Length: 306
Ligand code: GLY
Image 1 (tube, rainbow, N blue to C red):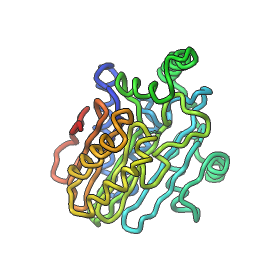
Image 2: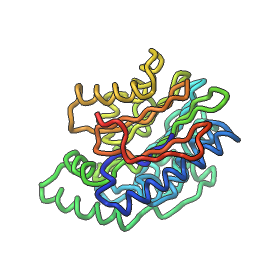
Image 3: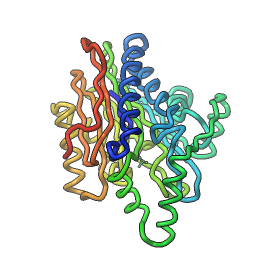
Image 4: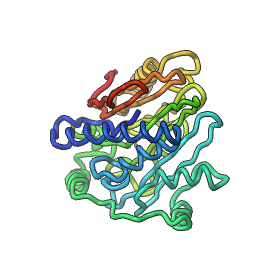
């Protein structure tokens, strides 16, 4: 199961059509990898493909911070042993999710940030890329001007962006035939963020979690997702017997009740029985999935809106 971010995709029909097509292709590709190489390789491959597409806010096409820079967060998690790897504030590299996987597999750490993470990327020879796109630069210019005129704050800007266009994060969750559940996530973060700001996608438990009972990834305003520890909570609900759908809806509902409507977000999840779940308080969520027995992947611009 994959998603290409929350927000309002339908306003820009050209981008919405492309995103729907791309997430469907990503789910197809992920499903092939799942069958041959298992859940972890599948979710990393899915996120990597979306990082390489300028359609999504991750890798190429990431959003810009207030100073016009791009700093990305990413993470991976493997459910059976609670293995996890995450990176924050990484720049210039094409695939932060690959670096997150290297943190998990090749270091004794879980989360690496900034210069240290970049040194690791260099050590492993990760490919660099120009991540800037005209589309994101245009959005940044418009919102920075309004921010400087005092018309917007960081939060009101991102809330408006979420209601007007697609904003956040890409992610994938998978269950393979060995019962292994894996999750991966990657993002450029939110527009106009302060240099040094880290979002939910780098925080295990908040923007990503996977255990024996389920896996979950988040998209939307990270400051709310982090305070809820949303993905861990969804997995806890799955451990308590809720299906992936019930768990995602319950967490999104709790977000609205406990934090309020100004921090909208979306979740996708897979439980250990292979049920999928998707819920959002954002206007839309672009997602796709494929299971054994399905002829082709199904993609959609919305799930259960809470
Ligand atoms: N959900 C992406 C972020 O807040 O950074």
